[in-house]
Structure formats: C-alpha cells, structure tokens
Amino acid sequence: MDENNYLERLKKAKRKREGRDPMHRFMNLATGVIIVLAVVLAARIAQGGKLSIGFPAKEAETAPETAAESNAQETSADALLAEEQTVAETLSPEQLKKAVVDSYQNLGIANVEGFVNIRESAGANAKILGKLNGGAACEIEDTSTEGWYRIKSGGIEGYVADQFILTGEEAKQKAQALVKERAVVAADKLNIREAADGTSQIMGSALRNERYDILSNENGWIGIENGYISADYVKIEYALNEARQLDLHTAVLNMYDNMGISNVDTYLNIRDKAGEDGNIIGKMPGKAAGNILETSEDGQWYRIQSGPVTGYVKAEFIMTGDAAKASALDNAKLMAVVNTDVANARTEPNTNSKIWTQIANSEKYDVVDQDTDGWIHIQLDDDTAYVANDYVDVIYGLNEAVAYTPPAPEPPKEEKKKDSSKKSSSSKSSTGSSIASYATQFLGNPYVWGGSSLTHGTDCSGFTMAVMAHYGVSLPHHAASQAQMGTKVSSGDLRAGDLVFYSNGGGINHVALYIGNGKVVHASNKKSGIKISTWNYRTPTTIRRYL
Image 1 (cartoon, rainbow, N blue to C red):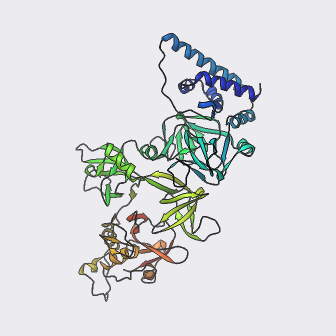
Image 2: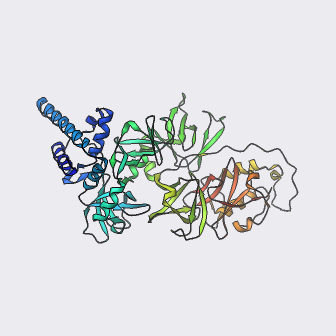
Image 3: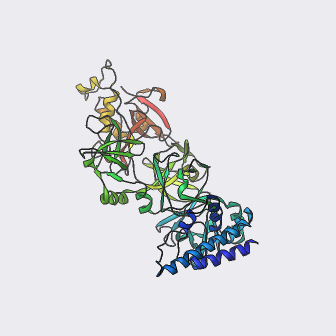
C-alpha cells in the first residue's frame, strides 16, 4: 500500500469523524499503538478540506440523541482508528514523512534564521498574534494582498510578509528534511519547568498543539529548548514545526497557578520567615508577579515564589484574584531572556557591526521591536542594541523578584579627612553596607535624563552623584568623568559602595552602584526607573572606589 492510498484513507476517516474529539480514545491505547497513531494523526484532514499536523484543539462534543446513536459513533470511531493503525504499519518512516509534507494543500515554509511575526491584519504595525520560527510550516490560504500571505499554522490564522515564506516545490523539498518526531502538546496548558521535576520553577507554558524538538526523554520528562515538560501530556509524532501563539492573555496568565502581584510603587521586601524580624532575601519590583504557595495562619503573610526567590511577603501588599489578573494584563510586556552564558549586543542588526557590549545569562531585557530577520532590538539602560535571535528567548512576561540580601556591616575603619564642606557628621562612620542600604531606599523611583533627584527623577550619573554626596564624596554629573576619579579596583575585590561603569563600545555611558551579593542598583531607563540588576548584566568596563 503506497502513501497515496494512505492519505485517501485518512481523508475518508476525517470526514466521518468531523465534530468529534478523538483524543480521549488515543490516550487509552497501548503505548506502542499510541506512537503509531501519533504518526497517523500528522496527516489528518483539517476543517474545510485542509490537512492538519498533530492534535486538533479540543472542541465541544455534540451529545448523541440516543444510546444507540452513541454506541454507533463509538464503534465507528474505534473501527476507523484500527484501520488507520493497520495502514500506518505498512509505511516506512520516509513514506510517513512524505505524507506529512503532502498533507498541506498549499505549503509555506518560513525561510528565516529567527522567526516571522504573524499579524492580525496585513501591515507592519498590526497586532502580533504569534510567531513562525525558521523552518516552520504553514498553510497558505490567500495571496491576494500585495506583500502578504494569509496563513494558518498551529491554530493561528493571520498574515505574514511573503518575502520570508518559501512556496511550491521549493517549500516541499525543504520540508521533507524538516519532518521529524516532535513532542506535540495534548493539553490546553502544560507547564514548562526549569528541571525534570514537578516541583521545580515554572519557566513558562506550552499550549495545545504546539510542537517542540525533543532534546531528551527520560523518567517521564521531555527536555525541550527552554526546560522540561511532562511526557504524560504530549504525543510524540512525525510532524513539521508550526506557529507558536503570542497571546498576551494566555501566555501571561498561564504562567502562574495562583498569581500574586506586588501592589507597591517601589519595591516589596521578601523575607525568609513570616514576620518583620525575618531576614530580607529578595525584593519584588512594583507590579511584579509570583505564585502564592501558602498563607500564614494569621493571614498577614503570603509565602510566594517569584523568579529565583521563595519567601514571605506582607499580604496587604499583594493583589490576588481578578485584580491580579487585570494588573498582569496591564503590565505584561515583551522581554528578551538571554539563553546562553553571554551574548553580544551590537549597534546594528548584523554580525559586521560593532559590539556594543555583552549581556548576561538569564537577564531580561525589554524588547523594542522584533521585525528584523534574525535579530531582536532590545532596550539597554537608556540606549538600545541588537542581539541575535539564537541567543535570546522572546516572551510575554512580567517583572519578577530579584534575589537580594543586604550586605553585613563592615568593621569600622579610620576615616581620612575630606575637604568637602558638605560632609556630614554621619559620613565619618559610613561603610559600604550603609551606602547600599541608603541607595536601595530609592528603588522604583523615576528615571529622568539630566536629573539628580533621588525622589523626583535622576539619570544614572545623577543617581550615583547624589548617593555619594550623602557620604561627603563630591562627583561630577557625568559617568565618564566619575570613572576617572577614585581608586581603580578589580572585580575580585568588588565591595558594596563601589561604582561599576559600563561602555557602549565607544566610551563610558552608564554607571551603577554595587550593593553586595552580586547586585548593583542604578537608574536604568524611563521604563524601569531605579532598579536592581546583576552586577555584570552587561560587561563592566571599570570599577572605582571612593571611600
């Protein structure tokens, strides 16, 4: 039996089965049969005579009018499944792969290094519905709009720029080499976790019918590019990759099982126990998100997991329920998360352009735009840069907590006299830890270019100038000039109160204050204001000490 007969039988089976959800039948079959049927599903006919790859989204079933009708439907479905199994067993892997490709009536393949945006309408400014990664497949439904194709892929219908899509025989030839076994999500929402463990941190969500390359498959967990998913809720089958949704509502709300949002304008302390006497182990920015794990007996504290931090926050400062969901949708944004040790940030979207700086693993950067093939345009403090799409994951998300423990007080040191007339008596006992504590009081306050007010608005050098002035150190309102003062120290000798300087490849253009435990506080940009970052969130150029 050849693949043509195979496709004809699949078409006949689909027509008989339209309107029913066969997924619950498949899950009850033996493991060996499941794998074969997953392959068969890869070439089923979709609504309107088109072929779909993988699982259809679950639809509401129409209740049969009588028990006899119900039994007849079930018997028919069982017979069709058995028929498909028999047919599939006669085909070789190469025939099955060809059947997947041939299941598209008007195949398109994304011919890009990164991804193509799928938009709600034909226009570069239209709302983004999803993304079509390089090599992913789509069904081209209409080509009448100049410069745009209307497509369907991964359950998404929208428009893509036609210049990035291969069609015809060229698409089929390329697709043949791209078909392989993939993990296809069979649940409405599936958590992506940091490790192969149901208790590890949730990194994101996979949605029904999304397909993922399989990096590993052990002990009930499938390793994918961004983490691990449970093997219990996926089907492994031959398929082409298809589109991924970028729906703000789904992507953000599904990341949290019991969402809590910090209802503060600045930062909220996370403590190691439920009480004001608990040690500070992290800080949640205003409108940051986390999972509420439990409530204290008196109801005044929540145990929460946010980013890398798990601890206790005052319940009165946390929004829950519908209020939390509404806030999440208002504040979610596109962010680029570095997925390698370091990534080059460049001045232009090409590898021949100058390296602006290097950015660090797991750091999140606001996305300016993502319409340049293979490159993501990111916000980097009060400037912008480009990073290759391969080295970042673009997600819709919310700010989360940063790990932060105030540095322990340093042993008192004998102070040298300073000539500043503005020196206060308190500066005689100042230490790096007290500088850090003072500086972090202003977290969340606004960024204003040219400003130097710690409360009403400041830029990066205005922030460090104002903080150090409180301790009797006079600095100019210019980052490059501040970098010429004080004593140069190595990163191995870095301590709280030191200033860390960064460049854009052409000179010093940003400064931050080190607050201990691998963190800096700095006036970053208009979106973030005064914030905490990892000290090497971008490559430091020099470090200076003034006290």
